[in-house]
Amino acid sequence: MRYWSVLFALAAIFSVGAFLYAPFSPDWWLPNPASDYRHVVSTFGREIDSLYLIILIITGVVFIGTQVVLVWESFRFADQKDEAGKPVRPAQYFHGSQRLEVIWTIIPAAILVFIALYQMGTWASIKFRSSAPKVPPLAEITGRQFQWVMRYPGPDGKLNTQDDLFTVNDLHFVKNRTALIYLKSSDVIHSFFLPQMRIKQDAVPGLTIPVWFDADTAGKYDLACAELCGWGHYKMRANVTVHETDEEFRKWLNEKLAEQNQSQLTMATVSQER
Image (tube, rainbow, N blue to C red; front, top):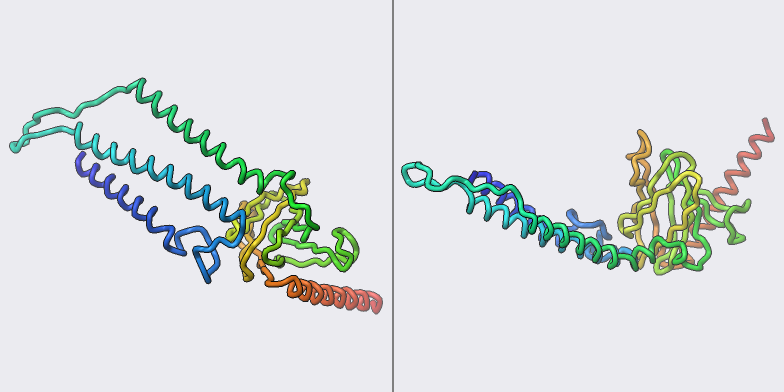
């Protein structure tokens, strides 16, 4: 029994050590820019990380406390033998305690209620439609097996018109500006996940869901599907580019529009020749 106690103690020590080391290691913690792994690029990301740390601290304290009690009780109530190996006191067993059961029911319930109330403001600012920013939509994004199709407003600045720009797996927006997208799915449930920005939203067939986010650092980021959606789920990734200025974004948009128009013109010419 004592050997098992030592094993459990070592496991607890390792877990606590990993818990303390993780925030200082870029490979163990939540993803951030490679240039500064401690900097969270989005406003919502910082709020999510704060909630995450609070929950992690609460569960960490509970884990350490329960493991200390477990190891201590294992030694205290184990069989005791003298030097000759004869039992001095047999192990003690307890069937249960109504008082303890009430205590360990009330305390976790109180903690859960605290967490539920504490996170409501952050959750509402990220998920409630009433909190959606009053800005023109950046794009309509449709998930389908196994890619993300982006539809940007064209020169008229309106979505769902003939001059819209279509791209695949290529999301662009400007830093320090809230990006509003409309998320859809054309087949199964997908999950729109921006890990560096801590944004995750399921794309559900038949629904159009507004999603908003921002970034304060220009650069390249990731977009992945976080919902198992079929055999090609592993490759359902997209590139995210955050531009430094609106001029850079407009330049990219105009270049893509020119390429799209040229492609459509070429296809029309070939079709007429046939």
